[in-house]
Image (tube, rainbow, N blue to C red; front, side, top):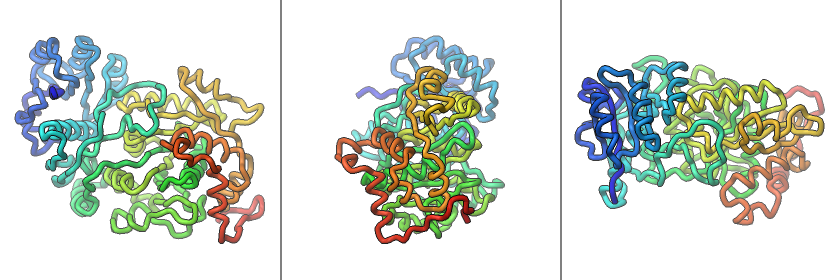
Length: 480
């Protein structure tokens, strides 16, 4: 089988000192799958006629700005993937790259992960399909060893703008198993980053099998769209459908999943990072999904974001389904989650500002090179006479399919706010039933396996109610 190649365009200094690009310890010239170019003339001359190179990474070049070289290479061969690598990105640069048709604008973290994927794929092909153990240095920590084969189709073409949803169960934008752990750490100082990577990386070393969970973040362009409610109910419904489900609260500032699910002493992210053995205590109980709660202290959020890629990969190996709640303010953790998604549920509520914010979020994804084909759009709080319909939102999103989630009324806030989701599910609330239909469409094998024969809401409700005394509060009573 012919090996597909990658071209790397960088100035001589970067090629002689790969650590400047985040590739410390790598011998670029020895990589058979990599073609190196230091001048724009030789890059265009070679790539204009070559048929083996299927992807180009432009870091820098002599005499020509990287974005101009990337645009020229894309214009020369439109069918080839061209990625612009920028370590000091600006909104203007991303906009110019998008306008030039460049397929992706890669951050340092994304570039290092992409390099690792292609290196591992080449090693796998050369070994005849046997997984290889390769050492690869992290961008901000010690070298880790990865023993893992990449998933098939691991280097997709990144797309911009809303697109039809990909086949269920396919993580179109998810990084491959070979992505280096802790490729980008976000500690408060360089010393703290080094100590964190050295202390946690060995304890969270990857297992030698591909992550297999169906991974679904729930996001929106702005706050108040109902992410926490939908994420909590979606996880309970998934568990009720027979999937071993984990709910991760990635609203790192104001996450309140324990209160919504009625869990009094949850396992929190910072606890797992301090003591990885606590991962084994994450398990579904009495119809509720397993829950990994947001940090208790806001100042721990940066450390959690730095460890998120490795932690999420570990969690994906332990569950059938992982559903992640997200915060309102878009930040690095959103990119980490969306890049791993099998499906990403983007919510819009009945405010025009929510729809505008959703479009802004999609534009941001396009500029950052995050594929949008796994995105699924849902209009929340649909009711007779509501300002927006799914057709309105679909038109605004250039024809993307938009599901409708019905308005569940005051019971949703009352019962979830009281930490008794089982009563909400048992009542067959309109929101629950419409969300159940959506989850049956999204979860791989839910219908085919017969898991949908018995209503997930009823099944989950019965499991939760069994042996539990109702704790429903009076309407209007504050939730403590």
